[in-house]
Length: 146
Image (cartoon, rainbow, N blue to C red; front, side, top):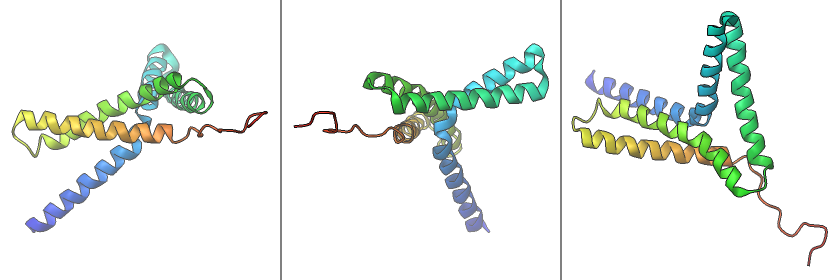
């Protein structure tokens, strides 16, 4: 019975980690949706208005981010937009990893160290997912090519 509970715990942790990596890209739109939905609800729109405002804001933030990454030419703007998506994902990765690690490690230094590694891993994953939509530069396909 103990072995079964250990295996179930490993499967649960693996599923939660997979979910974290899969949804890390949407941390910024989720934050914007919660902020807009809360604002709409508190300003008198009610629950349906708050939900509509939150969903619209999340879609708008994600759509504008994808549009900017795909269509803007200067690389520094693309990197700034990618950083805007990666930073909340890394913060979410830190706290999710810390929530798992604090049950496994008694030492605070190890908890923080492993949480930072988790934040780095989630941040890298979010960066790769965000920048994977950008089309590569077309070299040599101008009006005049040598």
